[in-house]
Length: 123
Image (cartoon, rainbow, N blue to C red; front, side, top):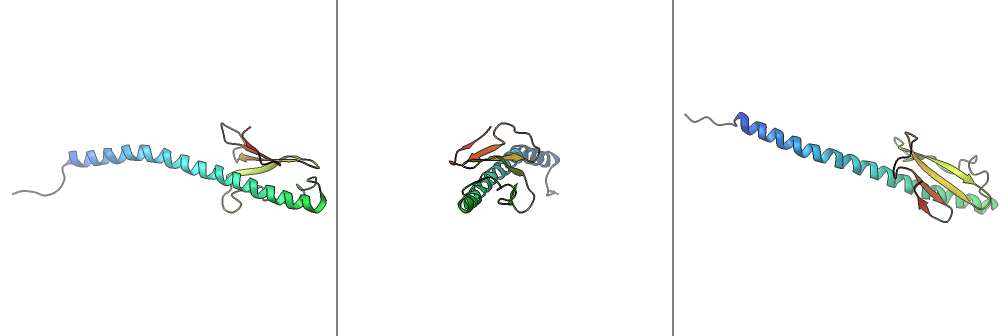
């Protein structure tokens, strides 16, 4: 009589293969999600820069834009926020916007600064 089914060794090999594939896929997915949140923060900073330009066109100054709720200071603007946007400087003719992760600490490439001339940098 021949029995059908899988042996214990075959099942253990399948479980080991799934574990190996998972150990590679999970960190790659986490990096992908982190990069997408960072890219969304950059986009939200550019949207904020456009709002600041509209504010400037009304009074020819950036001073006071922080109290006028010109920008949504979180990224993404809807859902669970991952980054906080803040004004580093608002002068009559210049501004700098910074995106900081919710943890508050800037690691390598985690924070972004956007200036009036469109320069994007990491502090």
